[in-house]
Amino acid sequence: MILPFLLALLAFGALLPIVAPLLRGGRPVASRGSFDQAVYRDQLRELDRDIARGVITGQDAEAARLEIQRRLLASDKLPTTPSRLSRSPLLALLVFLVVGAGSVATYLRLGAPEIPDVPSRGTKRATVADSQANSLDTATAVLADKLKQNPSDGKTWVLYGRNLAMLNQFDKAEDAYQHAIALGQNDPDVLADHAEIMVLQAGGTVTPAADAALKHVLTVDPANGLARYYEAIAAMQAGEPQKAIDGFQALLAEQASDSPLRPQLALKIAEAARSAGIPVPELAKGIAPTPAPGPDASAVANAANMSEADRAAMIQGMVAQLAAKQAADPTNLEGWLRLGQAYAVLRQPDKAADAFDHAAKLRPDDTSIPLQEVRALLTDQQPTQKLPVRVVALLKQIEVRAPDQPLVLWYLGLAAVQDGHADEGRGYWAKLLTKIPPGTEDAKMIQSAMDALPKQ
Image (cartoon, rainbow, N blue to C red; front, side, top):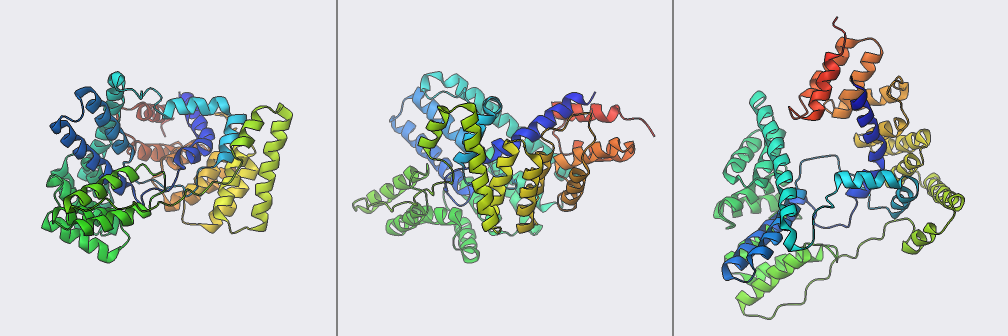
């Protein structure tokens, strides 16, 4: 009964160490996702003004709106444990050479290749945007149910408020943030988000209350990008274009030279310059992207012409070089993480686990590292095999810091069932069910696994 679910989890565990770093990697842009969201929302308001002036046609406007909305949804800030790795061409090469078929399948599942680039095919864009919006609706409903059961959970109020803001329900979002702050959620990022909601409630106007909230954020966190962005907007609205230009230029200087946020900041600078009747100033230069370690494009191209034996030797050589660097510099956290992921790709789980062990010692509070170790150790695990002792020990360690982690709940439940403790396993899985949106396939499979347990 639980075999399909086990196979799905094991496949996910095997592919995640490969796919996640590649998907999460990227060039440095804004310091926080909320700053990105502020810019994208501003783009939507700018698009509305262009439509009103007749600058853009209906069909092109629809395609542009859907693309901006897609980016806005993609910048949702539901908290996860973020990877601090940069994008690694080494891993990209390993994936291409060793598990190409798996990576393609994963891309087709996680990516959105059906989204076209031509406005004439806007129907498919709308389908994708609707799908993303429906997922957000579901997640928001789950958070609302959690708050009914535990209204004193400040962190959940923050998540709920962020989701409501993504759904443009700004009045409800502002109320959610009020609850969160009253419950002690006074982190500068939360306060900045709350100030942004107040601006959005007012249709983009930085009201005196919002301005006061933004200034408070900047006294606590002077580098907060979201607060600085809206303070520059406030300066424009208050008739202080030079102050606005200075603010936007400072933000522009902190973006990567190819950041997608630079064009919008440049537009704001030009708009402020026009309102002041002064020439548009030279734009601040961005930060040059830091090249990631690993082979360059020519090395990747050469690898495609190698024999299987030569490619395997080249890969092993690169991993050996990385291992040697780590031996010489054992305090390099990201190096240990890259090495662990490389060994996982090469299906050498013990070596991968050892590398992740080194990384975990350098950052003991980061539960994502032992989770990567668990996935590496379970790469070749068969559904009928008993979970290794090392895996169960790691899961117990993670449980202390992250008792609600779904993967931990599933596997600890499975370990209990394998040891003949059906009630203990049922307890883990029942808790897991509360973390899964009801009615989904995952929820049904977990329930089926529980129903298959013997009654004691």
